[in-house]
Image 1 (cartoon, rainbow, N blue to C red):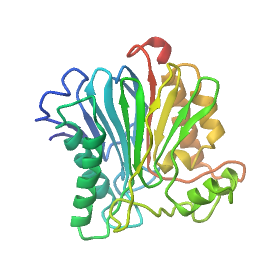
Image 2: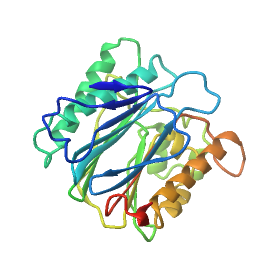
Image 3: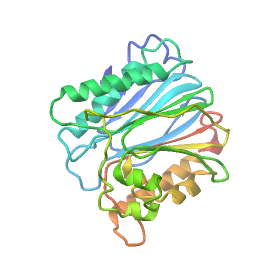
Image 4: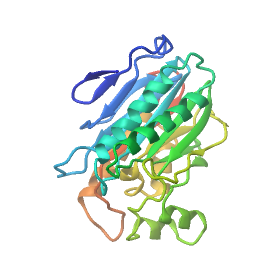
Length: 294
């Protein structure tokens, strides 16, 4: 793995599988002022990561964009737990482990085993720190128009159809997330809950579990949103859906970024506001870098 400051990595020694899909990227302790765009897995991915406003410590959120062919790859986000030691190091180790495993795979048509191997390696490396460090990790396989989710923690993925239908939403592994899923807590109450920062399943704990979703077909106009809690704690679900369900992808992602930044800097009883590190990926199938997609 070759490091290119200030946080961009390229993965070498991958057996050649990443050549046609473009260079893999790891964005660790990165600071973007605006959303970025690149071709990925037969479509376009728009991405951004930056640390909490006015924060002096490093950005504990990290992103991985791992193409394995022109129509397949893995998108991932890790959010180091800030309340514990070495959160930024934990997210870095998790991203590196996943990237190494995915880019050593010699069969792009079957990425489930390399992804799970990457999770297992991440678990081992974070535990070996011996400092109580922990991180979330969510990875989304996109392969020939088929999507599958893998995650530990409260970083989430959301799949939205062009008419605004939520086709997939991963469960946040947190007391508040479980309460929402069980119908015991409304989304509005969850966004204002005093314990929304607590995560009950993380890489680094002894009794974690990896939540793997079933395969799901991507329709042409579906939009995938992946984010750390810096995204989902500052925008309501209906806001995200309306912003991404149609229209240029780049414009939608830029609007999300702007609105999240405003929420983080302005506390209000009307809207959620939780200053935090931010990482997000927004993906849509179609002709790569198609102007219609942004």
